[in-house]
Length: 262
Image (tube, rainbow, N blue to C red; front, top):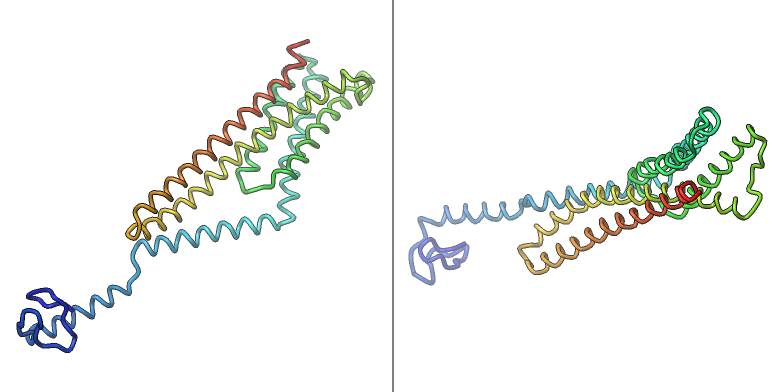
């Protein structure tokens, strides 16, 4: 405790200040009570500590939910059915309507094929984290099966061969398949960026709470952490967007190359 006259440190058992020699007898009960209140106040966690703990628990909960989702076989089956089989059936339906029922220009089918897979991939990767390679294999299957399925539907009408018969036809099939695949890949990248932004918002709360808790100890260190985190955020956002624009351009080029050039 401190002397009320000169504010120097005073022993708990002292009744006279050794610095200013003032009598502390009348102030001793009040000083003892103030010292006890200060000790109790020191034991109470600060708001920053509460925020840090809440953000930490939210971060751990998100990670646990992600692990549970990754271990669920049912979620894999549901995602494959919803995000691969459904767009496959819709592409075949679009081909049947455009090429068989209405017998209109095939450029409409190419445009639909470039647009339709994208939202499916976007919402798939926006919902939770996925491994790229297994879904890339699924995208290749979707693209090739769609094109071969369209050829099969056409063969039912004009009895043409289902599979390509020469190098030129194989080139057209591969280009068309690439257009569908890159459309899906664009959706994957955009959905991955959206999911990363959602995860980063929860991480930002944890980081901000941590920075507030440590700012009183090292302001320079705090600035460094904030700068690094901001740089990572910028690279992640712009990097994913640039790659997505690239895959979109490839999808448009491969999808319309054969139609426009012919």
